[in-house]
Image 1 (cartoon, each protein chain N blue to C red):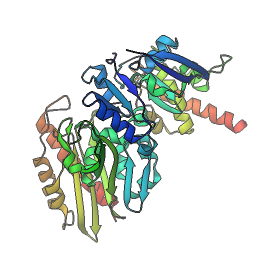
Image 2: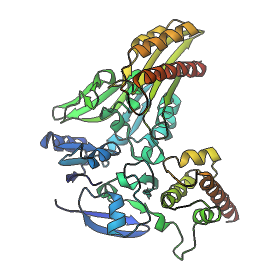
Image 3: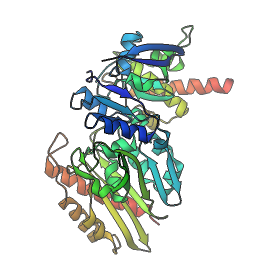
Image 4: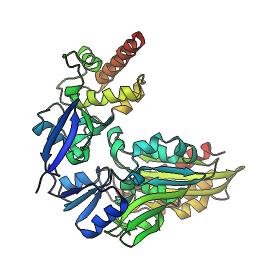
Length: 163
Length: 287
């Protein structure tokens, strides 16, 4: 099957590659671009471990063809920290509040929360739980994930007030 | 899991998309959000030789509200339906239903057109479109035609859409101002299909129910418009006897499969509960 050209911006960098039409975005990211932060969990769009930001929206990259993302701007967990390596407030909060145990769901969880806090900078606990309802965690029982996102929301709003 | 190989097309007009569909008759499928189709392709239950991605056809992404007349493009996402203040004002059952479909990520890509067109009895919007008496606009090689949502579904995954046709929009007249509506869905978890779900739209004239329309999701191999159940409410005060008659009439037309969501009897029972709760909620919201 002939390959097609795909161009997109991933974590601020222009990417141009050739791929089969059937290549899923998660495979392009992980195998061609070596961005192994987004994980393949269920591979059926339930678990959210493959969540990335596509044109400002959270999507499950296991259920999007790379061809559909032609021309898109994509952010993965690798693009969330600052270029100098300083952790994003969410990443720091997950560390401080024990928001992960095995860590498998964490890239998807943080990438989803990153967009959630832009859509709703001061979410209630219920809004956080509903906002991350497309991301499954089998270790934590979610309690510390919710706490981490709450803490990050506070941190970000303090920062914004200071600016 | 890796889908089978296909050729990818990204047309910019409906005519171009229909030309591709007709030119590859039987071997081409429309790709909208892909969240029903791509999982089926991974399982090799769908193996199209051509996929026609409609994201660049701008006319399929518009929501037109002019007075009570509403037309929604087939490629409008659930997230866009939820965000539309116009729709919320004229027909709030759409937002209420969308918010019960899948999860935030999936609502960002899943479309209204995909939800109604693929004929999956688990999808929520078909019953809503039936209770609203919506019309589907299909485009094919011979032009466009309209099909009532109530006439569209033949069996699970079988509809009256020809394989050379594509759904372009959904039209309906919004219920009158002051109507009450509700969509009640029992599901085991976020992202699951309904064990049973019911939608109700009704209007009151003083204490008397002036009009009512009830739709049922995932309790038969097609969505159901519960005509007898709807009629059982009209002209009543929505007293217990009337609600009970509507619940019985709705349950009588269900024919659910036994599956992981429960035995058939249970799912019919849940359908009755959902109808009862949706009537109550719609009644409270009507004025």
